[in-house]
Length: 427
Image (cartoon, rainbow, N blue to C red; front, side, top):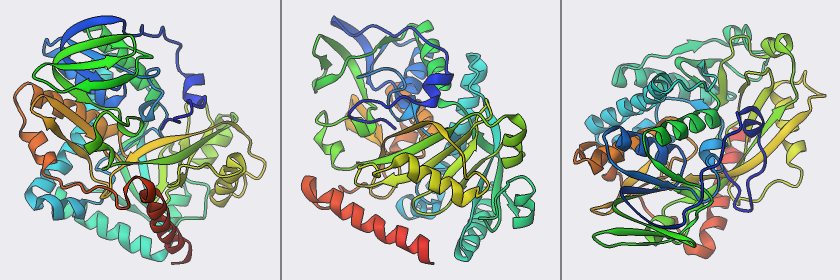
């Protein structure tokens, strides 16, 4: 998540090591592959290509971590933002199963990179999807059955009583628990990947916004002060890139999401809230999610805004949402509150592919990017090296533009999302 008016300081920035910024791009450079965007997609792609010996440059408009990759909820979870049955409709059962297995590879890829490059990103295992309404209990149990029988991915169903033995909240009717998913510090992960890429010879340029890309047999990425020529290019800017590729702009929408991190609670009080240190997310359309941090704070996210306009009192809104989950935290104070933009596709499925044979893109992570963005970078790197089988599958997912054109698509989306929020509130 990132704010187009300038990133709001985050707890991640306050709790991550300070790093020396990479220089801006000046003058002309030539590489094998030029990547627009220094988030998880871009850096994962850069690492995969550099490990194979290619010359790679990454151009970041702001600082590494200013976008969604350095500001998100930090939950590393299997799957994609869209439901698996939608992928069956789009791809058929066989390829939907393959795509699901690749999502698990995305989780493992993060762990492998942390091991290979000694990245400490405060990984904590355990994630619970929790229902509020009776219909959501049925929905989660059907999902559990499908994941077990159709995808060989068993999850644990917890009763409300078992959940309450580790979670100090009576809001939920049970939990679908996954011990293999969990949470981490995304900015520390991103910084570690950046350092690893630079050590492998990747040229990283910060504060270098790309103004245009010349599409030709040899691509040219232009900034105000420089230019990079490359045989291959990757567009990985997601919600913050506009005007570089109009055919991509129409197929994603920016949505604002918000996070609040409390004052330090102390280890004992924090553990009394979430005894097993898992991450938790409800399954409302406008999801709330929460966890503890390594320094014993409550981390709470949610309150999506499809108009991208923040609520009049964001801090008060987040405090009210926390009190619905933890009524005992009436006097909780937040040290950090921030918001930013995520990119969503119309069907919430990942949108990855090619604009021409040597120009690749990945977008549409729809708020589920920690595993999928890392996977996207690897899949695109494979395609650049001549192994495009996996990218070909993702490219078969049909993506329509948002209805309403430039002027009406945001009001139409706001109206549609209001219905889903009303349904969650009443049924």
